[in-house]
Image (tube, rainbow over all chains, first blue to last red; front, side, top):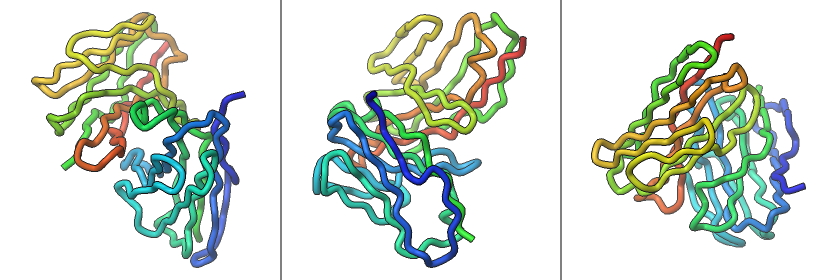
Length: 114
Length: 112
């Protein structure tokens, strides 16, 4: 089944404890992206990747890191999480950069930072 | 400034009626526009895309685009309770590579 998977789906952690949220797609998509969704603020893009080893900042990259060493994986790293990073996170992928808008979303990761 | 604006709602319509959702955008260079549907607690899913001025129909959904006025709308005919969700308008940013800008969404409630 073609899909975007994220792990973990739910995570409660404490301030400063490094964490990684994994994202994987099995559709051989070139474009991948991370969003966070907050009440009243909507979906905001954190980082995106046009292809392996090519990443760029979205609207809210502060406090996050990403890497794209393999085409299928695009992990989101929080080196020192803070409470303001409590949010619902979505990973998304798209077949190629020209059709990046038609994005397929993962199921989401609900993160709580205490 | 990249902005995609939507009325947050909730928009309430009776079953069988036409639901009209609107979106305005600030970037005159935008060339493509998308509507996503998001059920509560779920991830967004693409339901319509439109690239040219005018109407595009797909089943009960019609997207309308007016680039001169910088608005895009989504009409849902014969609304069903299962259409109750938040509808997100998305417009690519033309000044920041390939980032996709979402509106905050309009909550639609279809009452039986």
